Image 1 (cartoon, helix red, strand yellow):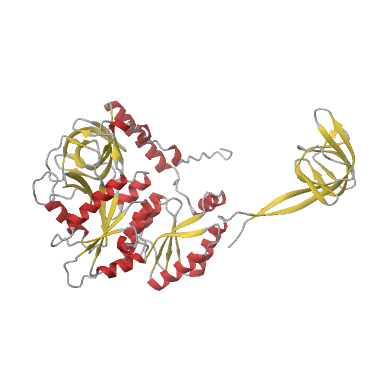
Image 2 (cartoon, rainbow, N blue to C red):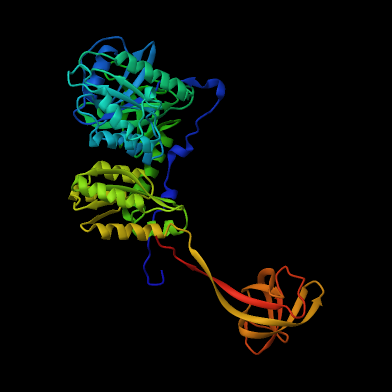
Length: 534
């Protein structure tokens, strides 16, 4: 304002969040077990879609076999009379968008690995996403019908990533399956239900509905259509809902086969019609009492988003990250690392992992060969305070745009030492500062006066440097420190003084000290903080 410029910065903490107003009525007696939500992930050619197709064809929740209808992003099947919901999303939006909003909807992840091909970069990426989200992992070794199937190779490769099979003394379930013959599919579903039992997934079907948008689009003749998974409460036809800037009354609901539904319970999925516009995937939908309430929530979110667009990005830049580090909020620096060739990647990983001590370290949450992808940006945006480092690669315009939208910092290098120097500088800011002392002065106590209600005042002669009011001091007797504190009062005759220099007399009061004696020395000093470096 001093220069006639007003800066409008939106703080993420001030975001209008209608979900906070949604009260999950946690009444123990109303809690019931809900269906688990499963995401299938893995390398592009390892058969995750075929696996889901097989499960769906053999176990349609309604009991009616039917061809696969259009892609709706979430499907429900039945096993032992219990429902299981599967999310089938391209990429990793199921984690990133929802983690960024603090609502991880996935309960269990099935990582599909081909028995004849083993662990691939996308397999590692999927595992890193699942671990980052803190979600239990089940490994499905697919294509077991093939002659070249080698499940032990897969187990060995995954064990190197600390994904150790139960049979080898680890904690991860591995199931051999074939999406072609159906082998092992029933075992896989059994393990899913067992894992769900361990998780004790509960929800209250009697409360207002809360759901996550999985996919959303506009369909001719139907308007905005959204695939949702209900997390709490029960959504019914006629419910008034809000999802981000979209709101409306649910006019119709159907399952993935297109069959009409009257209600969707916790853990279950469905397709709804009736929103005023297309809602973002990953957005939270809640049911509210009135149309007015829904409209107000949507309008407030619209206004917040508009202000956010006008203001600067609220994510941390490298400078802000350094400032956050200095505040001591971080002890590990999350990094996504991409390089042009495997050799460079391995060299960088090894070098970055060496940049550590008892206090700080680099946490490589994902690394890979190739360009920086949209998925890297999504993962960085969902992992607080992370940076994306690229070596001998340049982000495309689309990726740069996405990074800008998400407020993610990308740094690219073509000299390894420059990259390491920048990371060292950031890590240096994470270390506790080195505190040293600078001596300011010394004074000899020549007289001690007890002042009622005030305490002791020492009549001193400053023998070295200066004594400052408010400075840190030590009281020294026969070479031994007997008290440490601060100068509470400093006077020259009857007048208050800020400092008294060598050769002058003064009266000194020491905060909380009433044991000063003639012949003691007062030593004055200040603490100097220096930034540590690796």
